[in-house]
Amino acid sequence: MSNEIFLLYHSYEYGKQNEHEAKKNLGIYSSLKSASEAVNRYKNLQGYNQFPKKCFIIDKFTQNIDNYFTNGFYTILEPYQNHKINKYTKIYAEISFESKNISLIDDLNNIIKFAPTKIGKIGEMLKSKRIRDNNLWEFQTKIIKANELSKVSKRLCDLFYNIKDKLGEYVRKNSCSVNIYFVVDIGRDGFCIEIDEKLMQLALVLNSKISFDGLS
View 1 (cartoon, rainbow, N blue to C red):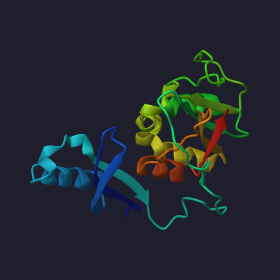
View 2 (view 1 turned 45 degrees about the vertical axis):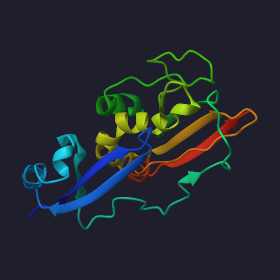
View 3 (view 1 turned 180 degrees about the vertical axis):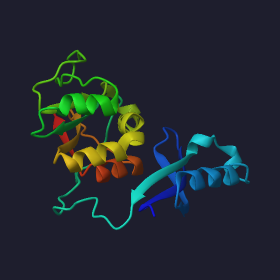
View 4 (view 1 turned 30 degrees about the vertical axis):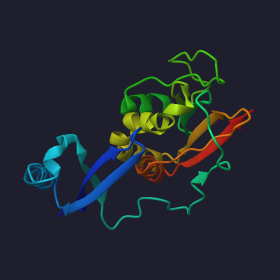
């Protein structure tokens, strides 16, 4: 008998900048096939039929195994104090994986399917396929303006959320250190960031800390 279970939930974003998420847990199933059949039962019901099928999400879990935080935990969120933001504020985010495994770069490239980036300061041109060393894989989003703040965390989730389980398994097996890092040009007005639920789930699976740095 398999120890795997599959959690089905329905999720969609709303708000002027899709800054909010509505999530409904729908069921727990013993196989991917059963969960997929449940999607077909739900998708034409009132309310659900207003949304595309991609809003139904299936996550796989393993029973009776200590999967996450087996060495304890540390604070996931280290935010700066919230301030006003303005449309000229610039922000980007980066995610990094580090371990002693010399095949880290190749392994993650095979899972993630796109090249890491060279990490630079705000305003610098980023060049793909350049990394600092063989034990560190890093990716940086494009620099955006403050009136698109929600797009930063959404960009990370669009790229990494659907492969979070594979990444999480690799992180645990190879004792990787993972960091999700927001860099903000705060100027005089400071900044504030809302962390959406998907990003928090991604951080939990990867045992990653989310931190912030303000550049004046």
